[in-house]
Length: 126
Image (cartoon, rainbow, N blue to C red; front, side, top):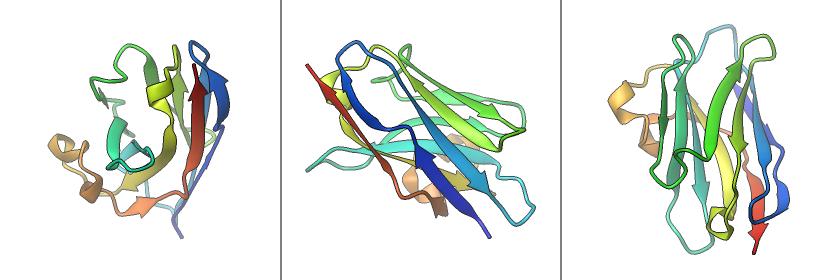
């Protein structure tokens, strides 16, 4: 049974770093793509980053490119989102998502993912 569990959120000050984890359990299959999305209060859900399990191709939103890094630890079945140089506008609930059948051109779209974690809150103060 597929399960995604996020951890690592919390409070940070502008300029600080946080690392989010998405620990993945499956029924034996390997997900094709893992994505991170975020949603701030009153805002629509926003794509943050994605990574392809086989090959490691990555994609980032313009708002986080150069500050955030997505990576995989295949031994731990965990996807990380390293967030550096945090800004108050990074405050949101961050959720990881997974798909067995994503087309790479669609990884920025939330509807491409069938499996979601519960989310973890990140709050950045100025």
